[in-house]
Image 1 (cartoon, one colour):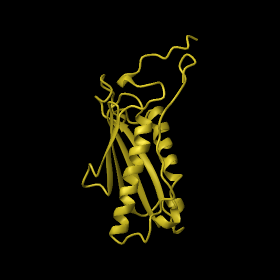
Image 2 (tube, one colour):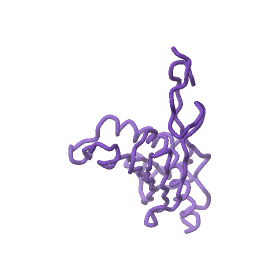
Image 3 (cartoon, one colour):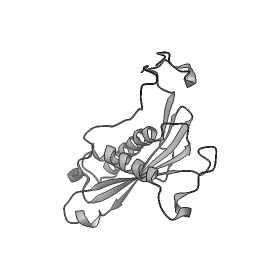
Length: 177
């Protein structure tokens, strides 16, 4: 262990975050959306609301939030084959979708949502590390905007959100945080 911090992008200190920006309402046709940038990583996140819930929730008066995640083929520099062309999701994609969905569901009162499903779609345009974290944070912004729109349209009496969630990744390299 050398104890010397390795060089970091954007001339940041070892505890510094990459530059970040969020453009809310990026996709005007979505109920809620955001384009999030964290360093060179760019992710479009949308929240679409549909009446109805999965079969196991029908008649419960409770809603559901689920997430889907994908990477554009050129998002990593070397072309990544689309999951759909392989006929199945790879393990990494499934794990990330589950992480996003679970993170967002942690701040939702499903009773207040009513029997609606919110689909949060996170599509990576450009990957430079941190796509999970960008998707969780951008997904939260899209979900918040979707809930605000449902309230403004009279579909919800109040927000079903009980809090907010955001994500960053951190670690220790050669003993240096």
